[in-house]
Amino acid sequence: MYKLIDGKKLAREMRTKIKQDVDGYKQQTGKEIGLAVVLVGEDPASQVYVRNKIKACEEVGIRSYAYYLDAGTAQARVEELIKSLAVDNKINGILVQLPLPGHLDSKKILELIPYAKDVDGFSAENIGRLCMNEPCLVACTPNGVMKMFESEGISLSGKNAVVIGRSNIVGKPMAMLLTNANATVTLCHSKTADLKEKCLSADIVVAAIGKAKFITADMIKQGAVVIDVGMNRDENGKLCGDVDFENVKEKCSYITPVPGGVGPMTITMLMYNTYLSAKRS
Image 1 (tube, one colour):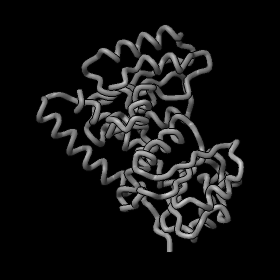
Image 2 (cartoon, helix red, strand yellow):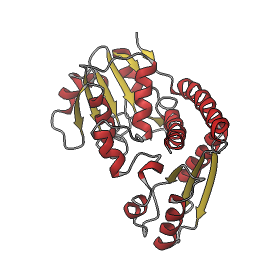
Image 3 (tube, one colour):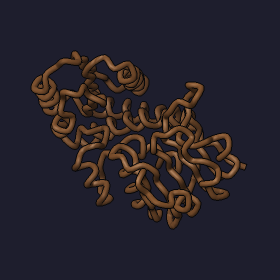
């Protein structure tokens, strides 16, 4: 019998704790904690994400500073804004909502965020520190997955883990976090040969490939832990993950649903990183 890992419930519990930590920080220092969110353009999905992030800030007592720029804003103007936020003592975290409009060089813009304020955990310095297992701000989604393992008491040491997807945002940091937790990790992607065999040997499967219901029951061994990071729409336009949940669940010891699994943890870990950034400064 499988157990569902409830991301909504865990996110609520963590936000309660983060709020206590933020309140304690304010009492101790007499200072607010500030998160700057930069949105360029009117992408509807990005607008929803930004609203959710601002709402989460209110919930845990972090002050949000939202900067809305027109889709046609010049590179120099965006760079100027990031440079000013980088030296602003009120701001503990800077988040640039991706994707940016095509004419902007996002790599150049993101590189202007100091690693201590890089609450997304995307900077070369934070990724390098993660690789060396040193203190850093960790990418929110993979870090949220690690909290899920922790909350269920799932031991990772000595386990075979397969991560499907090699993005800088999820796949690569996920593989590093699992390695740092003493799992033996195989990082798979669209060019991997024998993906099914690799999955069948895994005690833990993290799917972050961006293809609806791609992971099927014949790819999962009995008793595996399956974490679904995907967010797709199925043939009926209904939200679904990268895992064929209905058919895979019966083979699992633990599985995350979509929606209500990894998703709620991502913004929660963003709040956690912003608090951590303030505390470390």
